[in-house]
Image (cartoon, rainbow, N blue to C red; front, side):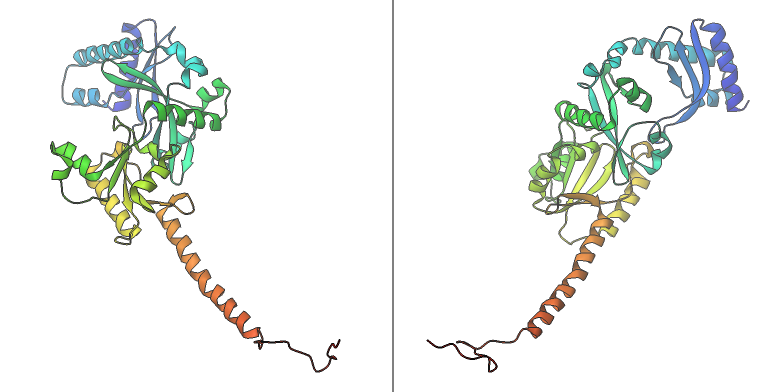
Length: 340
C-alpha cells in the first residue's frame, strides 16, 4: 500500500472511530525542512488541529505490523496531543495586548524556507530571515510555541514593523543575549574550568540562556555594540546553527572564503538539516555600523582601495597647477605700484 493510500485509509477509520473531529489529509507546511504530507485532526468546536506525520506508522505497516495495532497507536498519539494542547491558553492568542508580551524570534535561512516564508511575516537579514513565535511556555515538560502567520497578523490588525519591534523587545526581555568565550563553551561541554581549556581565546559564541533558537539574538538592539567591545573591532559572524552563531575577529588570519568552506563542511557533516542556518559568512563593520554578507564587505573594501589612487592623482594634478609664490610682495609688471 502506497503512503497516500495509507493516509486515505487512516482518514476514513479516524472519522469513524473519533466522532466530533474533523479529519483531513493535507500538506503540513513547516520551517527548516520539516514540511510533510500527513493527517490533521481538529475538534469540531476547537481552535487548533493536531497534525501528524504518519511515515513512521506507514513504515511499520510495510514491515508487517498489524494495521489495527497501528491505528490504535495513531489514535493514542492524537489524543495525547489534543490533551497537551488543551493545556495551552489558546484564547489568549486572540488578544494582541497579551500576545506581545509572549513574542519571541527565530533566525532561519531564506533559501531553505522560501515557500513557507510567503505565508508568514518576516524580517530580512541578508539571506536569513527573522520569524516570530508566541511562546506558550512548558507543556508536559516541552516548550510550546505558535508561529505567527500572515493570517494571524491580519487578525491582529498591526503592521509587520510593529510586530518586529514588539517581538525584539519581548524576546530580549524573556531570552536576553549571551556572549560566551569559546573556552567557556568547551569547558561546559567537557565539565572543566574555562582556564583549563587551551586555544581559541578570541572566539566567542552568541546565543540565549536556553541555547535554543538563539541565533536570532544578533538582531537584538544593542547586540552589535556589545559584541564590538568583546571583539575589539570588526568581526565575522559564522552561522553555527539556528541555536547559536560564532564570532571571529577580522584580523586577516583567514579569508571569508576559507571560513565559508569550513561552515559548509561542518553543516554537511555535523549539523542536522533541520538545525542548519546557512553556508554563508557575515561581517560587522564597527566603523560604518553595517551588518552584511562577508562577500559584500570584501567588495566594499576593494572599492575603497580603488578610489584612493584617483584621490592621490587629483592632489598631484592640483599641486602641478599651483604656481609657487616667493616670500614678500609680488607686483605685476602690467600694473602700477601703489605709492603713498
